[in-house]
Image (cartoon, rainbow over the protein chains, first blue to last red):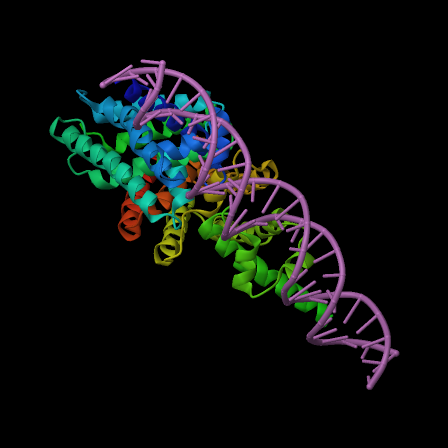
Length: 202
Length: 202
DNA sequence: CGCCAAAAAGACTGGTTAGTTTGTTGCAAG
DNA sequence: CTTGCAACAAACTAACCAGTCTTTTTGGCG
């Protein structure tokens, strides 16, 4: 029992530190030793808990990144009424986090998608799945917004979802360049302007 | 004279092939030997023409990527009237190219920005400069659109430019996932809807 | 032809990497 | 208290990588 707990704790710590470094420096430019140095652990420890570097990263995707995307971009819709309002707050919050995090390097999902695309099919497939969850959630909530009388019923929910995801990933990418605060302001301003085009006409 | 021509041709060929591989597999995950294998050239040839791998990449940025961004995203505005119409065509054309290119991996600029961010300040700086040229051009043309009576004069050109750049980079990223054709259609549809919010009200 | 420099070949070096193996520690159950 | 195994340590291997160095080929020119 005690043993199992320690095992879980160590693995959790490894994954957490691993993500931070992979995210900052990229998967391929980060060696297992780099991660282990930060953890003050040895090769033995690493390969005792994980079969390979790839499997380690996959476990990070499944255990940490998925949760992050869920809590930041999906959960906020729970029990809310107007999807446009939720989206506004949701994106603004996410951008605020990014703005104040010096170490932030863009949007986790899109960054890794860029890095692994054409290199590791397994991981790309996993990333796609997480994207899909986000997309489906957006579409569902937009549709609900229609029946609830917030979104115009002529609106193409699929297209709006894609457009929203695109713009968000893009602005997160631009923020890497710097000037995150100003960018966040500009983005949210234009997003609101865009929301008017999908709101019910009265 | 002949010699100089051959030298230029070889360097051009190296840069062209180099970009293709760096773009597909990433800079750090592509070895100089990988590029040379594709070129059927030797180490000696490479280091005769270029001082280092980094300098090689920088020359690619300056000679090829800048031109690409210019001809695809900046030049189309030349001598045109309504910036919204140009943008529509311009983005659609760029997305069409991406759609039909099996090897396409996203938007060159943003991909490399992601990869080099936090790793190579020199290259990040260069990439920022190219971004800036694009941004300035967008803003200038939006402003011109105001005086020409196409864009509403209350519109925040800076913010619109950022929003457009974001959405474009984002959709290019999403296209990597597949379903490029449908995505392009959805994106252009929503883009047009967005353009209505910045057009002059009559 | 013969010279010479440009262009290219390719063996080599020092450093790094993912993964293996073998050895050590510490704790919990018998 | 001792035995056994989970949890780690660390040296090691084979492959790879950027860059160097020495040697060879090539092509234009006198």
